[in-house]
Length: 230
Image 1: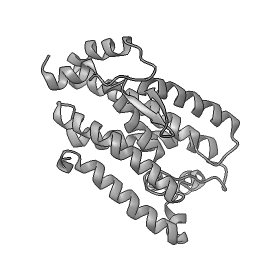
Image 2: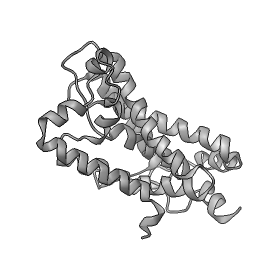
Image 3: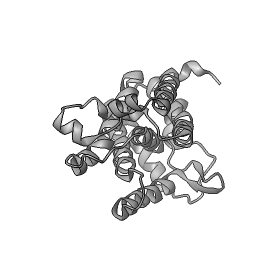
Image 4: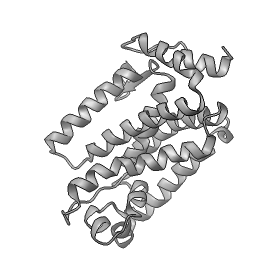
């Protein structure tokens, strides 16, 4: 494994770990950096859109997000860098704009609620995850480590789950952030490819036509095009 192929992903992971560890033990630091729409609006503390994305509630929350970012972020970073899609600049734009875009609906919904707070990298990580789907929609993913489905099937189930749980509002998870981070990541990457590598679209469309419930081990048409010179 060549770690030099995805340095930005590793730097982001390290930053999340350090920031979260400080937040675990320093309540004053956590209060100043957590996502807090009331203060973002009334005190203009817009920096919280970013700082809250590097905080996590506990070790399980941190490990799950960083595990997901490692496996999908390194692929997206490599694709962006190796195939004329803007490299580190656009990868960072995907991550940070995805982080902000994921929090905007919650900000609009809760900016008059002094008690509502949120934290976590899930919105940004969802943006990266859904960006990766475009390059390999029918690759396999294991839900809960056991249930094998294709990436695109997972994406549809995931979005449906986010919408449902957001309406239920029965837990402390910001499902709106997951939903809108995912949507942003997918749309951002489609636009990026349209602007910088429009030659890929026939292959992307061809990939999406070949439905697979459980996924395929065969490389996608767009990846063959990008790396095989078709």
